Length: 92
Image 1 (cartoon, one colour):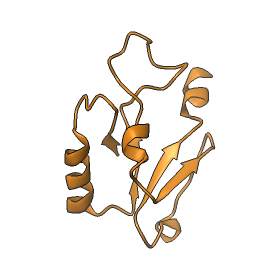
Image 2 (tube, rainbow, N blue to C red):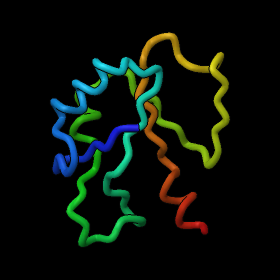
Image 3 (cartoon, rainbow, N blue to C red):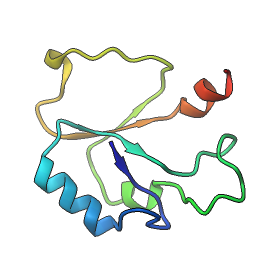
Image 4 (cartoon, rainbow, N blue to C red):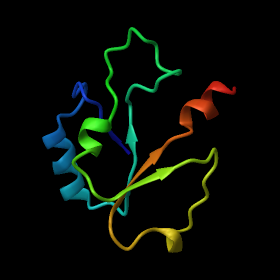
């Protein structure tokens, strides 16, 4: 999990890319970004779409729960963006 948002609140896009190269994760999950309907509108956070637009290996996950075994991990690194996170958290 890596904090990614358009305002580069915690990491610049270049720093995110360096983390990805250094760690070579099977799955990278963007976190700590603005989620419409969940994040306070006054938040300085941006969305991750600017960085994601430059990526080609994105999997949009639209589920409330996801169980993953090591055998389920992709052979090549993927970015998993959880689309339903706002609905999941807002339901509580």
